[in-house]
Image (cartoon, rainbow, N blue to C red; front, side):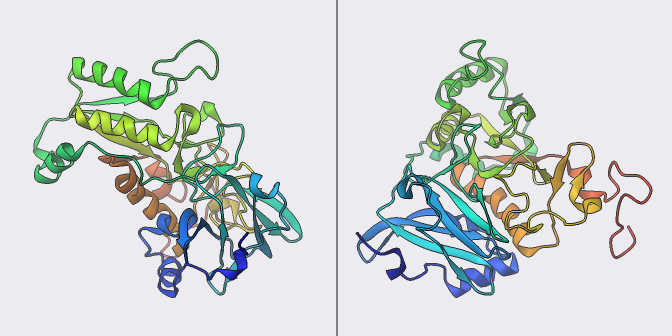
Length: 339
């Protein structure tokens, strides 16, 4: 048995600097949960941004969900907490227990790569680098061609309702089952691309994915990250591109998510005139914060890097651009230039 506190932090000063500046474009390789080997000892390194928490612990089946056993160490002044736990591996379920003014609140990992099937909410340690991609020909053709001078025909798909196994609420097809049926359907009708409604993890099935909690996790309703990779890979092998709906405009208020993550308005604005969306009852990202912009920009790049997607369709852009979107009179705050 190895002592977690005998191992040094893995985040470098340069990592912390870039994260604070909002310019760490691959922050998903540093924050979250990653299998690492240090001095011949394999385990999982955890890191999370929670600057205003008085403490953060890692809890999971491995410690009987006891927040006293694995308190994390804080990088000052970045507000990032980190701890390497030896002996853990892919498949471990975990949460961050965030001490908010003396009250422990369990949060899923903002950078988690997988999660339990809702309504369960734990994050799951995952390895996104073991899948063997077979879409080299597609990627080479994509790099060498100018997509702007070619016709495009997009089929929009909500994976949970397009086709199903039965009439039950959870009778979904797996990503791999969907792959073969989608290729046959799109090829017959001449579609060049599919556009998936949001596939990021979301607690409310009825939102169709537009109320995202796990921005870095494909929803587990239809399978694992490797299953989704298979779907993208199979489409590419049959010359069909993949576009994702992406929702950087707002997020839901579920307690296990980003809302009041460290007890303060961290990802959202504190003032509801800026931070709450009147139409959807959701919260609006605080784009003024370097770390929040980094979280979102890194997430956009993540889908291209890890899942080989071909494009993003950005949702609710108008609500991001106009501060008075769906607001009246004094219910909004102009920017510093008066707009």
